[in-house]
Amino acid sequence: MVMNRRAFVFALGTSLALGGCLRPTFRTNELDATGTGSISARYTLAAGDRLRVIVFGQDNLSNIYTVDGAGKIAMPLIGAVQVGGQTTGQASKAIEAKLSSGFVREPHVTVEMDAYRPFYILGEVTTSGQYAYVNGMTVETAVAIAAGFGPRAARDYAVLTRTTPSGLVSGIVPMTYSVRPGDTIVVKERFF
Image 1 (cartoon, rainbow, N blue to C red):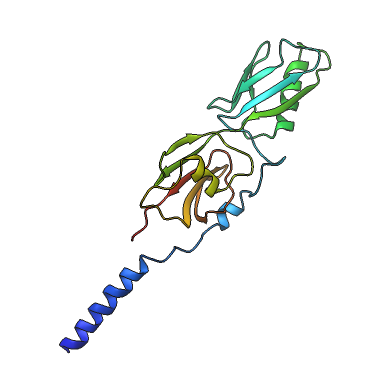
Image 2 (cartoon, helix red, strand yellow):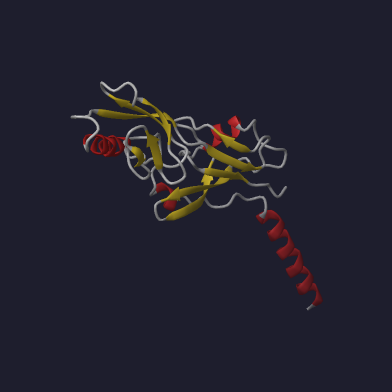
């Protein structure tokens, strides 16, 4: 009886110790539903995005505008325009609608991305913080931008959190997983 108890405690301790060496299972299903890969026409605007707005024939209205925390940009003549949650095409239509209501006859507006909102990286990296997004980046390139792994970093996975219209979505992702603007990456500490 005493020998069986010792064998059981030894087996339990060994399995727990070895379990810490294993990589957790990747959980990307909910993140995959929000879109992966490089930024496309489906990209929706949010706070921190910088837009280049071109109003043809109206140089005084053409400028670079930053989307504020409420999802709006402030333009001369027409004031605040709600663009958060819209694509660049939808934002250009919203600006045209406001301009055509007594300010500019038959406005033609183009909205282009000047700079995407930043991404954030925390945890076991050399320099955690906020960084400019680069189109097509992965978790691995985000770590490189943050000056590499810390000495105790788990180097084969990270936890990625993304804001969606229905709330925050998190998952354990491989280092090759695509990052989107506004994502938060946490590089965990390894056990051994």
